[in-house]
Image (tube, rainbow, N blue to C red; front, side):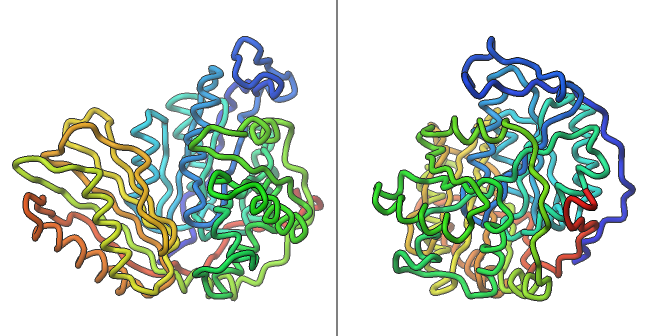
Length: 408
């Protein structure tokens, strides 16, 4: 797969900026426009490993800032195409551009192009960018180059790296359970090493003693970052994170050391699969039950292969933006519906994204086997496969890499 872009860089027009007042983030009437930032769009990047809850958090941030009267543009990113994340965010009504075929670092020009398109369409006050979950070194390859080349147009917020606390407990040796190989974990740890803000996104999954032990372990390993524990789905403790995002620009420091050979090997251990299917059943089917059953069947077919993230959306024909969404972020977890549909579905489009530490053929076999089983169930829908791609990510080849303040 070719990761280096060939498109020329574009200049981004300068939208007006209206940053939030962190003292009262819920009240748009008390939302000043700081003169120093009036002519620059705010750029927020929300990273983190696969399954950390980035898209849910991005949607929550977008909803918050939109509620303050700000125009928000979203940019999603993936190694492949046909993204669940993009479908979900667009279904919520957000202006969203998708960058497929490589990470932001390797598609830097496309990232700038996406910002240009959003600017031309809606003149956003801020951009929220969600990079690939297996990507790291984002400070040196994305935010520093943005500051150097487009610093008059973007105010770069601190980099947030989101963390699934249950997975983190296992990685930090605080609990038992399946975990990835060391070269995959190299990427995970490097993501934390470059973070300005480490966000424990699903803190409701841990009791207070476990959460405090995890915070202590992360804080000892990565003292450069401020840690926030919150629950996006419960809407709890988001305000301190939002205040940090709006407290100023990212503080430049020397870029972290990176071994791109290990990074490439870690990414290559992950299998990637994206698929799109058309489903139809004359009597209609229960979308929630179908998504849960399909996710469970894929999980069982994968066996011991460590799932990073399995996510699916189901969009009914004529549903006017309605959508059902299911996520599975660990082998020993249950598929979880985050959005549901009230009525049976007669026909609709299913988008499936699967990432796991195994070879791509294993992913393909697991998905095709589980989909074929749908037709065997009484009343189950027929499934027509429209798109399927399965691969290992290519070697990261950043367009730019700035080493720190001397170059920024």
